[in-house]
Length: 439
Image (cartoon, rainbow, N blue to C red; front, side, top):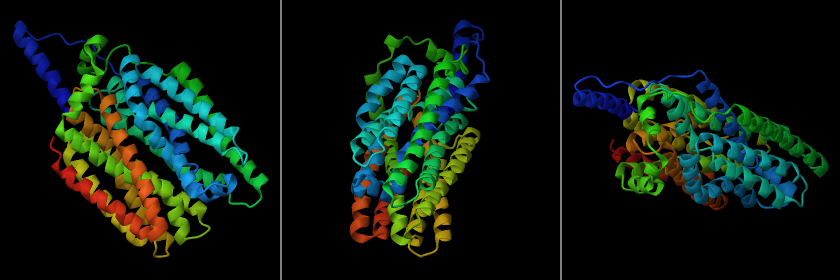
């Protein structure tokens, strides 16, 4: 973003020198509607991310209801990661060609459809149907994750973009937090299958109702872009004709950007660890604290709420200081420290200690999410924010699947400590690589 401001100043100065006078500035304006747009996006992102973990956090209950093994329920979370990988590039192309509104409409329509399919799947023999519903929701996620930085750039001024991006990511994190907290409360671990089906139906109906409302709001409220651009950089971007932009050429340039390649790997390592911890949290807690499904959800809530606070603090800090590399490295290192402490204290037998260490882990690990987006924009300007964030998220999904499968197998064979040490090793590698990422 500092590059954006420098570019605007240099552009005006060069034009003024060339014409012998100060170049006229194109009109810009900040609209109050920008806050409605980012909050609406944050809301439907919340509804979608809630469903990522709603199966995993009560893994043992869904295992019993559908008569499948724990690995099958793990895939209900991992399907979000797997779907993202092949679809991100066509969706990023669609975002560049068709804009924010079309992508928002497709995302909310898919999310709404998936929730109603899951409503129809509440029968022990209909596991395949609930997988189909989760697939639709996972496909909707592909249309959501790349949008925060794009919305921030199109709607917000230079001094607000990091904060706006953090608010966009905030909705995703809040949805995960609710996904940790609510399912164990709505779906208690009862033995009567009819009663269990009733509880699951209530959860699915609530989700479907919210998803439908948000789809209607997007249809009538969500706007493509403001009438006047928020910055001179955006005014110039609008003057570029679609045929002048090559999506494949943009990806090729990004893949030749060594600092950005390092960031792709380090972002994937960090966020992949978070996905693994979130997916396997129920199993890790139940091993050491049997019968504590609700507590496992509350620990997950603690991780994400602490991360939401970290995200907002980091966003405001970046807007004020522009210290992208230093802040990213510090937060990454503290994620490693948090993971080590969490791994060492999980089996001590004191849940209050787990709450504290999990909160510290979440503050830094989840707080890293918007940092990665904004650091990517800083490293790759003037390339599209949607393309760079798409590549980051693709990396996160790949590492998330690998880490979840590997850590799950390690936990089954060697216990939770070995599984968490496995993640610590990769966070250490990521910290070292982050230190080598030059701005």
